[in-house]
Image 1 (cartoon, rainbow, N blue to C red):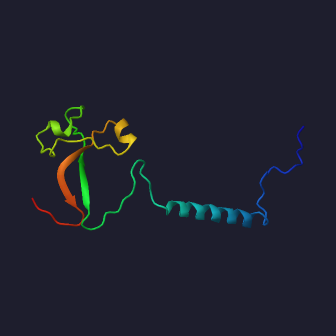
Image 2 (cartoon, rainbow, N blue to C red):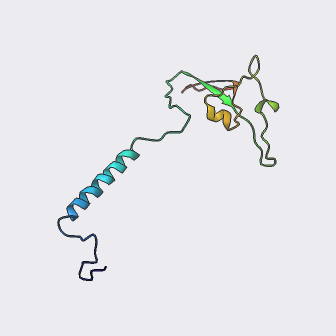
Image 3 (cartoon, one colour):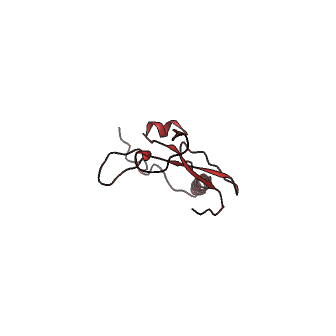
Length: 117
């Protein structure tokens, strides 16, 4: 049965629960700000910092076209191939499952070293 004399506001804002609400909101805001300050993570990619002069592996993938929807293997086109032929170079299961055809290339790069052809 309904008691019509009971207050209708279930969550009254009395001076006793306003400071508690403010403290809770400040804690939640601080937690969100600290979480965003940690950076980002791209699944399947491990962050790595190269030092000056260190060799960087250049890899190639499949080629796509705006005219056709079918991807073409990079080395089916007239590009230079590495000695001994290109080798598959999957780094993680996600690349393989996505159908990426990541292969080695004949190009050599060095971090922070200007190189000319």
